Image 1 (cartoon, helix red, strand yellow):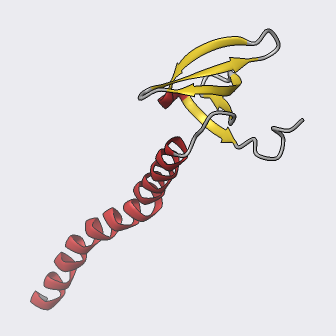
Image 2 (cartoon, rainbow, N blue to C red; image 1 turned 180 degrees about the horizontal axis):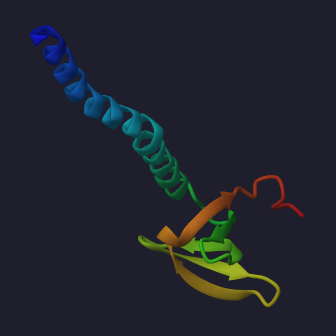
Amino acid sequence: MGAAGGGASSITLLLPLLLIAVLYLLMIRPQQKRQKQWQQMLSNIKAGDRVTTSGGIRGVILSIKDDAIVIRVAPDNLKMEVAKNAIASVTTQDSASGS
């Protein structure tokens, strides 16, 4: 009986550690990877790239400041200054810039 009680307590201690490891692998690690990719995307933006903000505004980057960018929004060529952190996605305009 003493050996069975010792085995059950080690499983009881091992279960929370296993749960934390699974939580890390399934939730925390992928989020960190997405955050790193997003930071890299922001560091690689340049004038001429098409961007979409987290609010759904689409435009072309005109200039880049430290923590903000100026974009031109169609159809009226309205210039807007938005925070860099508001950029949700970037489409590089290398091939379409000639048209």
